[in-house]
Amino acid sequence: MTKPIPTLARSIATGAIGFGLVSLCVFATVAFAERWMYQTLGLLGAYLTWTVLFIALSGAVFGSLVVIRWRLPRFYLLFALAFVAYAAAWMIAYFILRGTAGEVVGSLVGSVLMAIVFAAGFGSLRSTVKLSAVLFVSNFLGYFFGAAIFSYLRSEVGMLLFGVVYGLLFGAGIGAALRLVQQEQQDEHG
Image 1 (tube, helix red, strand yellow):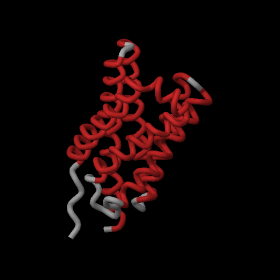
Image 2 (cartoon, rainbow, N blue to C red; image 1 turned 135 degrees about the horizontal axis):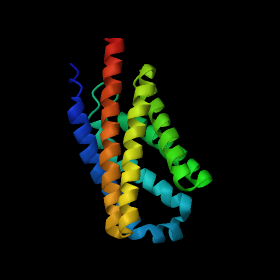
Image 3 (cartoon, one colour; image 1 turned 180 degrees about the vertical axis):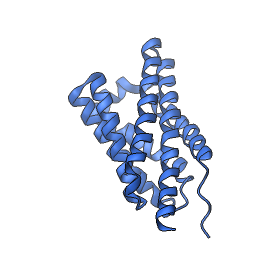
Image 4 (spheres, rainbow, N blue to C red; image 1 turned 90 degrees about the vertical axis):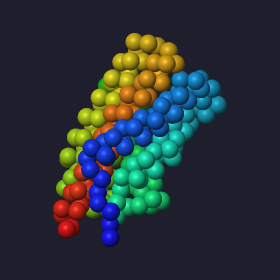
């Protein structure tokens, strides 16, 4: 018998706390090793490293919320595809458009791509718009609130707080999206 889908509150809390901690770890590498990473790995290599760290450290967090269709370690594949799609869109937009425009477009397109991967992976394409909205709003708020804190403090502590705020809000959104897509799939397929 399949375990029940976690409640929305549990999904949001698990996503927020888990991804908040993961994001703190990843942003710590930015706060304390960004220059070294750029010099050693190059711009693209540093961003790819951060993407891999996000995937490796948070797959189990979000995998713990999945009870329908995808289970660990298979969920890591789906999550990796979703996060790579998000990160690639974000990086392309940011490197081409630069500044706030690149961040906004990257957040929007990346969130939509993540939603499409989750919806397709769970066989619930009807949920794509809802998932896109949840992911975009949580991503946008987390990123820009976090960036505002960093902009104000301009320090390692500011970068760490950026990571925590981004992780808490975007993690809550990813947790909610995983809850919603599983509920949609269950409703569609009985």
